[in-house]
Length: 229
Image (cartoon, rainbow, N blue to C red; front, side, top):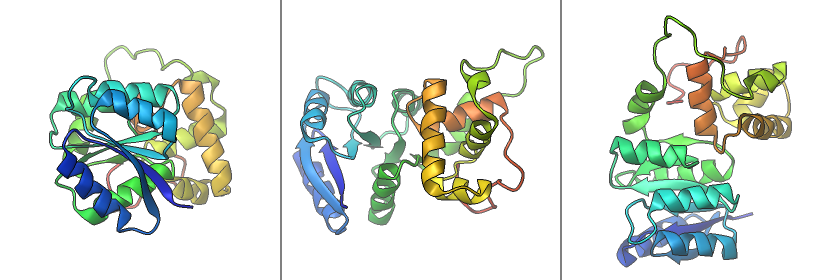
């Protein structure tokens, strides 16, 4: 099945270019466009795309507000595509539940791959901002340990293993291979982990796993060069 995408950007030329680029891949279909955040939410509700490709700086309702509304209503996954890598945009988008964050300087192959990965339930963060993201959310241990995040104690041992894998940025197929389970089972465990922790994206789960020091299951660590978490 094709990945159905909604493109949200306030510049018609940018929307047209993104449509042309995405539809050059036979497995991707652009089902609609939006010129502002309010239209993005409305069109996401009407069209139910798999992925919303979201700009952040738009007139009226901005992209972060629109992202939160779309994710909270479970209308689609959101992949942010913006010119700006300012921390306020990066952290705001990811905290709003975006499944990924890319810069518009990304090449065509990277963008198409990111859309496919987000549609497959994975998280994507531009390499340019990964280090800052980790520095912002993962801090050295404090003299007095903070209480564990709400819901962490409710995870089963297997779900904690899955959370540890998410902390390494592993995709469902990688989690399945590491834990010797099927990919469908891995996907189910990921959904349960997010629900129990009150999270809306794998990126949020990865940050929580790192900050809470959730261990990686033996043999499940990513190999050097596998890419950023």
